[in-house]
Length: 365
Image (cartoon, rainbow, N blue to C red):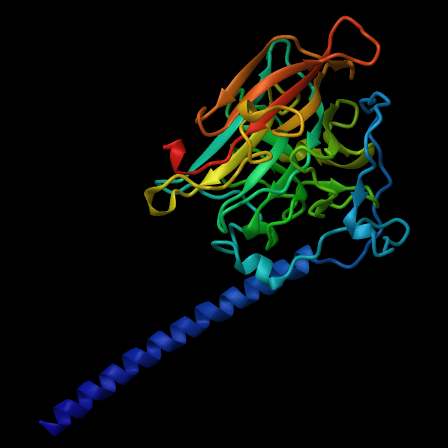
């Protein structure tokens, strides 16, 4: 009887040690993958190709408060011929659901949804980019959710579902805080497996030594007070076969055609906001969009906006489309409204301003 007990005890010990060994092997493998990814992402400063688009949309000379890049306030700058890149830490990667999902948009769970609100121009003829001045705010965001205000261009013709986003985002999981940060995102398969934020994977090629994707934005707008905005353009350069990102007059970088399938124009253009709703406890999220105010609460100084929203035609000209449509997933929670603001010198068309946003909360259900 004692022998049988001893044998059983030894078998249990062997089983437990096997589990420990397998667990350690998996842990070691994850550590190897994590270190390899950190080395890949945090490369030392290297010389970059000096490159600019063959053309760029030109903004009108509109008086507005000067925007400051916070990462440059300390007086730091990049060595000549190099570019600024936000350093990725171990904690940044470990906050993701997995190493494979690092830097990517969330795979939606059964109860998850992305709530949107904004405007879109007519899709015919197709555009070759878009431009607008995005009002900058900081709002409440739940710890595992995100809120963004952005320009989006896309093409869903054929098998590919290619999209590029650019604007500002508050994303605690990706950035590790609730600061308002400059961001860009790309995907070739409708946000499934390809693409990522900023330069968290291969794709976007940074050329600017002035503007850093992922930097937090200041100053911020306030309710009834001073309003701040960032001028953003995403446009197609046919000569170079690439899509360029321009922020505050600076050519930040480009997405080459090689990462997309047939993304040569953008029938899809969206101006507005979006939030991730995880529906914790079966209730609608309290994550806010835009300024946190619905456009019905008031327009300038109350709800967020994208000013001077325009598309770019095949010849690179800025066009104000007069036919636009709304899109919103939950109107009583987040919505959008157009407003036509006259130019300083009257011409045929006024400037299009897109107001959008909302507070979230249980009243949305």
